[in-house]
Amino acid sequence: MTFPLGKQYQKDDEFKTKARLHQSKYRSEILQVDFYEYGNRLTKADAVNLMNFYPKLGVPVTLRNRYPKYSKGLYADMLRSEHIPFNVFAPLKQDLILAKQVFNRLLINIEIASVNRIEVEYAPNPASDFLNDRTSFDAYIEFKTSTNESGILGIEVKYTEHEYKLKKGSKEDSDINNPDSPYNRISAEQNLFVPDAIPHLKSDMLRQIWRNHLLGESMLIHPQLNFKHFISIILYPSGNLHFEEAIPNYQSYLLPEQKHKLQGITFETLFQSLNEFNTSPDFQDWIDYLIKRYIV
Image (cartoon, rainbow, N blue to C red):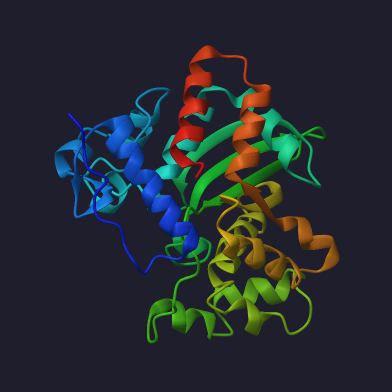
């Protein structure tokens, strides 16, 4: 039995067109299941059966623990990025040494002696102690340095997404324009940015990057936490040219000694590094899945 590719979307940009078709082919040819509405969307029956997720290495358990109720965007849409952190990071919870080796290879200005904790979809609680909003990390990693200092990696995962528009009159709109909000207070007090950077960081292109960065900074200064290091990471495929522009743009507003606080990692370099350091046949099957599933 053959399964159709399904409907595509004519208004996609160049990379999203390729990625939607890639996910449609994966569903049709590899998963061999039908589509719903668009070629990259699973039927509810297949989505409930977790066809959007790698079936082993703790991925289903991590998903169910975090989001036990069905959500169409997470469970059924193969193109949106919400599901990707589970497929990429849940298995690494079972091999913290591999995680350490990979991030030491990919990151600058930090030497990780041990990875101690990995979470998917994480935000510190209570939110009022930090940014007082719904900002969270797609993946969250706690580590120790060689001098036994504690640090955090906060990871945002993107696939075809770009920026999002600010909704006028929203809480976010109010917060970014309130000089007493955590966004503006932390930005002003922590000596992170060059003069006059803040209006640029509020732009649609940079605002989410700014928020994710500030969530980590709010954890560094929390009086009951003991973190000394934080790096905000954007994980994205090399074909998503938006972040090839947005990451250096954001870094240009950081003071020289702070530029390492935002770093980009591509899917391609992450998967290559996983391949390089992995020694487990079970993990090799997972890495092969990631490459086949997401590299366009």
